[in-house]
Length: 179
Image 1: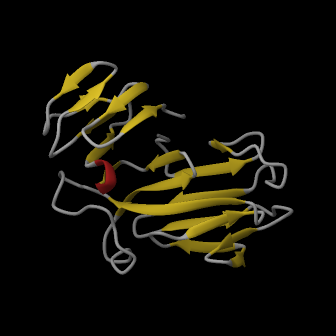
Image 2: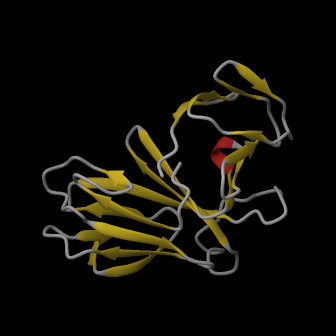
């Protein structure tokens, strides 16, 4: 989890480090704005591609494939800002992206998942709302109990998200906060 509205992706340094020789350092910047997420290539040597087209700057739509240097594939998923709390469906579909406020962006690469968190968002695939309060990150699941480092958290209750193993009924991840 990266609690920032703007991140840098690079080969050796950045908020997300992708150690591939074709990825530049830095390679690209992603900024989460109120209504969209914007990707900007930082003059990378081998380019950034969105939906198969080389781009200098582009809005990220839910489900877009972002390809770094033609070699590293990331899938982007937009998450709605939950405002006052969880409602029925908080993961944005591509048609709704311009109508709702964006609270975060999930980037997936094979077995890794980064959550870029502006303030608060709901991740439908995990049934988890994540909130950045400025000092710490809290989360909750509306439907199922979760377990963090062996401590059971009840559905509907907020609890602090600490680095380590977090698991629910249908998934398990190792969480880390990148500042």
